[in-house]
Image (tube, rainbow, N blue to C red; front, side, top):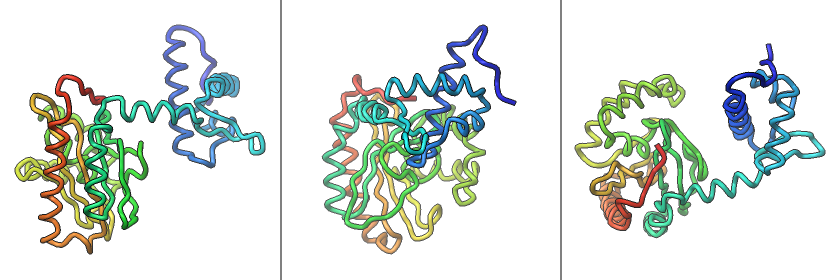
Length: 267
């Protein structure tokens, strides 16, 4: 049954929650978009409520409607906001030279990742000569913290209480990633802390390997990670050692360049 129209206490909060739900729904829909009726049904809203929220979002450029299909999709205003948010911490600007160097040297794809609540978000990436798919996709893509080396390199260096809370929150989300489990993620973290990097060879995606190191700033929580993705055939033991040396050099450069008092990653 569709929810009643917006009345009573908490109206503003309800509208905000519903607006965000619509944006997330359209984000998942991608270029195909969704019709107003489908949005209302998916989110259990009345048609008048859905129409009012959609009209407001469209007026502000956060969504747009294609006249030919009558389908809504995310608007370019969100892209502008996202671009500003992507470098709002300054981490992307500081790390950009490192991504360029690593991609040039390795010929593989390099990712800059940061924490966003219980997730890990791709803040920046640089494509190498070898084009492969990744769990996060393009800039702005997210995965649960604990999935893949890039997010595990961040998770392993958080406070124990934060680690436990994140593992509990994401436990039900892990299995869709090739049967990953909370226990498997938890068991990997001590080794990552001990050796200073995380790696995956064919575990999540057959034929794809990755390695990552945390970006750490003295006196601060871990602020992100650098990761290199490649085909498993390219990650031989000798090359792994060389790549780890390059990663170590770049995360140290980034850590030294970041102002420990001026960087704030969303939590």
